[in-house]
Image (tube, rainbow, N blue to C red):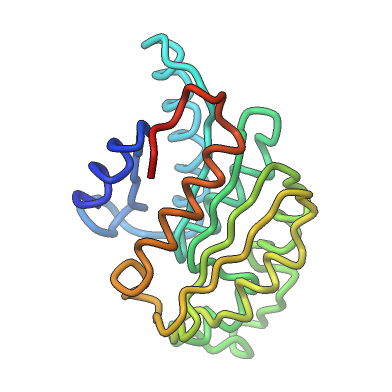
Length: 198
């Protein structure tokens, strides 16, 4: 994300990427429980820090891939404290993703209702929503992005399909469309003076 920070800053947007424990430069042991607990702590810390620094303006939650679970968790719990939601390469259903990661669902008695509930969570979010998904995503299929979009009750929602892209080259193949869609969402939730041109 070192390359993306300046892209957001050029348009007047603060960008705070956070990795879950054990991913990227984050230390610790990655677990779903820790990820879901930590996202609330990070949300509260960020909101408090912004208030203490006198920062104001729209607050948009964004999650990519597995991070979509954290983004949807936060957006569904803090609907009155956010202004928008962006889900990139997000998963709608937990079972297929767990299978891809090598989990034997029958052996553990997994049922989708016991998963992370991303479909149920997005159904509670009526803020402007942007779903970005790679057309040829080999990890989380485009149909998951479509399912999240279809389940969203937001009156203002957009589904951006990045043509020819897979899970890991979405920015290389579609950066212009990607940033244009994010810019459009930001403009919808930002006072006229708040964002510079894209």
